[in-house]
Length: 228
Image: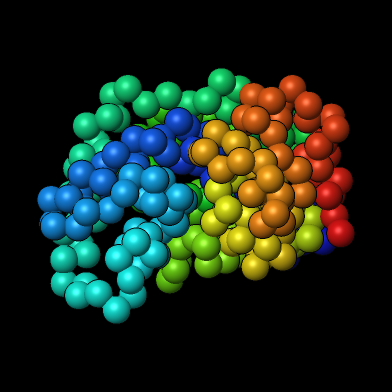
């Protein structure tokens, strides 16, 4: 780790790209295909976890896991139907570029992988600002475990205390906290500001566009601004 390096780590789904409710619908349909009737509200509250953690959360970790891969594949196939209409939140790409321009090493830290990640990066259209990408394929456990955040810090060669994670769910805040990194929350994934702050977010904004507008007052104002 380089003591003078700072990383701005960004979740993608629900934070930079408007996908949370599409994921909720796709999981609801996939689970129903395999005989699991789960309320959509419960599924929504689990979005942001990795697939394995989400299924543990919704179905219990003592379940028969033999269908997990099939359910996950069904979710991805159903979700893929929405790919042509995906959109980045207004200001998302500009926020990444502004952070990079201020000296942050920008890292995308996402539970997505493979084709899904390729689609998200095309929609975001900000690779010119991105230093590195960490996805679910490179870690043992996805959020709320801290593995993705720690891997992102490693790829940026940045210490946790000089870096900031930006996410939309309580699972993002928990993962960042377990990695020793402060988290900035946005409400675009459906979690309320009080929930994000109650889990440990150091600040919360309605969206990444609002965060961009108020960047000068944020811990993202300049590298090291949120150092504890």
